[in-house]
Image 1 (cartoon, rainbow, N blue to C red):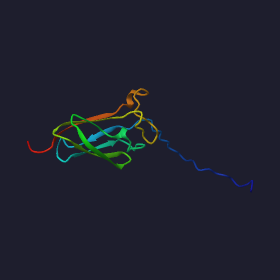
Image 2 (cartoon, rainbow, N blue to C red):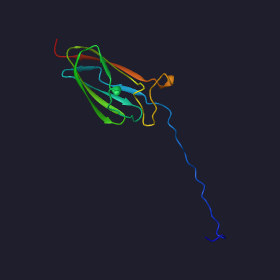
Image 3 (cartoon, one colour):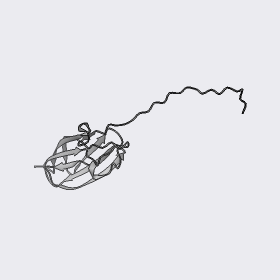
Image 4 (cartoon, rainbow, N blue to C red):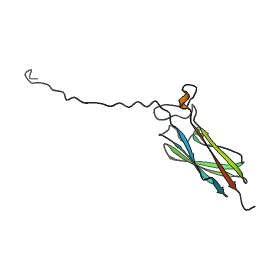
Amino acid sequence: FDMGTAIRFQEQNITVIYDTLPGQVKLQVDEYAKSPGFKVQAIWSEPMKEIGMVSTRPLVQGVLVEDYDAVVLDSSSIEVEIRPLGTGIAILSINGSIATSDLAGNTNDFTLNVNASTGDQKQVVYSDGPP
C-alpha cells in the first residue's frame, strides 16, 4: 500500500422506504348472477403473506352455498367461485384482521392501530333458474 496514494470515496445517496401501512382490500363482482354460480375477486392493495388462507376469502351471507373454490391469482388477489343452492341475494363481505399481513409484517389489527382497519362488502342478486 502506497501511503502517498489518495483514497477517495464517491458520495452516494441511499433511499430507504419503510412500509408501516397495512394492505387495503376491495371486492370485485357483478351485481347480478345466474346458475351455476359466480366469481368474486378479493384484491389487496399490496402483496400479502399467505394469500390463500381463509382469512383472505370473502364471507357469504343471505344464501346457502353448496361450495366455493378459491384460486390464488397472484400475491395480492384471489378469485373465489361461489355456487349458491338457490335464488337469493348474496351479501359478500371481507375484513382484514390480525391474520391478514402484508410482506412487511403489517397486519390489519385495528386494536393496535385504528387506521389498520379494512373491509369491503358487495351484494349480488343471484338466480338459480327461471321463475
